[in-house]
Length: 206
Image 1: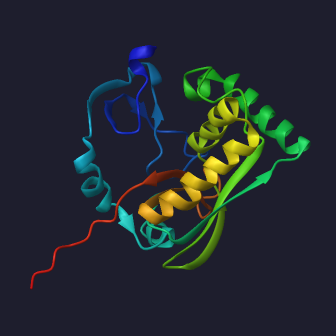
Image 2 (image 1 turned 90 degrees about the horizontal axis):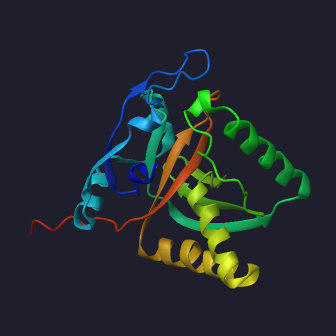
């Protein structure tokens, strides 16, 4: 429903229930009743950094040791990359999309995932408190951005813009990686979101 479409910074209310323990043991996991989603406000731009800064940790391992499966990390020296997916990879991704969209009982909707995967895989290499990492972006917004720009500008220009925005502008101005663990492997961390966010500089007391 149009009134239930929400943006990243909208405040929402919704009903939820716990997933089956055998399938998902993550403490933050909730099965949202999608028809219950209601937008109740929007977080203003001037308050976003302060809101998120409280959740930033040194590394996902720090969150894992405290039993969490979600984390925000400010990456050091992030390098944005992309690679062309093979035909077999594209078929596997499409098959996965079809299986999810054919299972409304799982998510409560038949249109929760996009119908078209991006022909490129995007990733970041970066450093945090645990050292150097290289991880794929499991972020549909990244892929949808590429698909939108590819339709507008063509593949070469779209990739150039992706590198400019996510490879140059975000690292230069400040960014966060939203990290989450795999449902069946709660020790395996993945990039599930990429946020452009200024770093808050604490004023000097002197």
